[in-house]
Length: 303
Image (cartoon, rainbow, N blue to C red; front, side):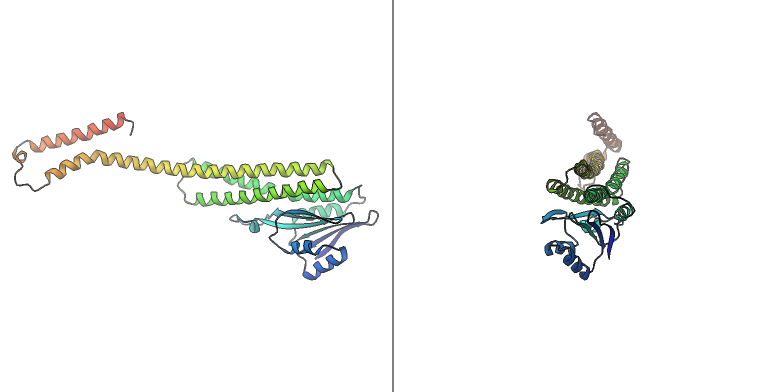
């Protein structure tokens, strides 16, 4: 669907928003606005990563935004993000995306109702769209941090839930995707700022914003990795404690087992068996060895 959001005849500028275009609509746009075929081909590729190209007087920008409808278990670029392509020149802005995006709808309503357009309004419009695109990752990072904090509390409660590792792994994968996408978006914004005809504080603000988000994504990825390592370390520590207790119990009964095994042998001549107090002496020796070993283990702080 091709929609003309607004047309400013005074400044000879038009904003065209295209949602899930058909091949015929792509052809129409290519011929009407003389778009480069290679750029149009990139628009057709659903898995294309963010990039910036300057083709003649037209800037071609591909961005990826966080999909608000992605599932909790989503952990790939295709599952977590959607592509938004932009063609920008002095005469037009063309935005292309596969489905209706709330932030684009909000910007369209805002600019459709304007009665007068400011100087360089096309550049200001582009900055607003790019700013909204960058900020789609805010909620995703906040949600991932909340999930990580909840898992951290569960871990320190000595929980043995086997689902924790899987959930942490999913968060790690999501953080990795966010980190890569925001880094590529940052590179795209820097190229846009470098080659843009209009250099203003809004453009620098875009770079500062995406740089901050990249830092948050990198911190999230590092924290979830540390939390995963901590969980594995705690599980290993609990296993070592259990094995230590079992080892000490085995050591306490090992001498007793030796004595029992010794007197369980079927030798024909064992003179001490004929002594009337042998049973009590052996029991006393066994108790002495048991409690002696127990005291020694406590002195070594193994218990």
